[in-house]
Image (tube, rainbow, N blue to C red):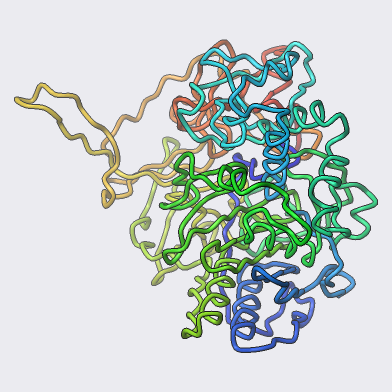
Length: 586
């Protein structure tokens, strides 16, 4: 949860807003610095990039384009430091986050080629000290590489409580559950078998052979001095709208094989070119053809990536326009990155933004390879996707009307075309969709502690014959919206026909409150409709003061309330990270 990689499940993070573009202003900081384009494809990519950055409130972006033989282009857009109005430069490092996982996978495959590791052998045979419990069966490196181990998505192996163990939640191979912990464990295997620290192994086995001489194997204070300035949400205890206030983040240290690499665009082009050539580099091979085939095999479907995506070893395997592609994203505290590698088209792209706002620059890398492929094939250049305004909600009228809670308080929602407005205190608060039926205020300070979570009427249908079958319960896609929640507050409209009284277990009062980790995660726990919630995530009780996080019945991610003093839990351990109760004013 703390340092990395797409794990702030407790805050509704945004996915952006749209404006007109190419020379728009970013936070009032001046015109966006742009590279000089060469050719129609680059001109189109530059125009889309400028629109995208303005749309998504990105401070700066670095890009790399390559084919199988040479780097086509590296480019910087916007600001490496907004306050100084210093543009992004080609030599600046950007943290690539979880794209690091493919590097880790390649090293594991190298060790396999050397006969040092069996990817299907239980990891406890390599690391007998590993602080995990495996009630559902042995975990192998294959399971860790594919995020199918059943382990929780913890940031690191070791917890503050030396007796604590990461618990497996489902049989290995049964589900895909993104797991940074798994790659931290792989790093320990690599260090043991290669008899040197992770960063030395990465440098010797991947970075040096590929000529990635400027890349930092781990994030340090020194490497941060060579990096673009990273930006994060100023109000890190609130939900974040697309145009929310950002602030520079101080330098940090991070060394996990799940996401420790910081690299300039030119070095990333070299890495992508090796992938395009299926493991081959200028003076030999990084991995064999057989190993590359293992890397790029689709082992398990990953619908949350896309309807066609699967996961290989440390990288997603997908199709785009009929071509096989490898792709991945990376999210750090203040950077967001993406790669697309078109194996059939022979082109690849990398992009990284120096801010963390809940999105990744995937549309940039996808459009880049579509443009390059069309150019290589002498076909018409494709049009860019339309970027939508954050306030554009096609079904805004579904959520309108008056909603009241048990105390008689009201929330009034109004639609103006595709805009959804919350009318409150004489003001119109514009809302943006976070995901699904979750919305958030675009004005920080007004309804910005929680998401606004709408709910539709539940319809009951009978299965079986003669009325004796099971009852399936769930919201119909076009069922009317009948309720809305804001944190612990719950409101209904006149069409609501469900229960209004809910029993809350007495012990839950000890858990309610606000908690914060040493690394800056701020989470709020509350009761709504008799159930315990952690931000937008429901908590399901599975033990004494122990809860499952989220909706999946098999999820290994847990929250445990500890050290209860005078009726209040003082410590909340969420997915292996300690968060401490805090008391602050309103």
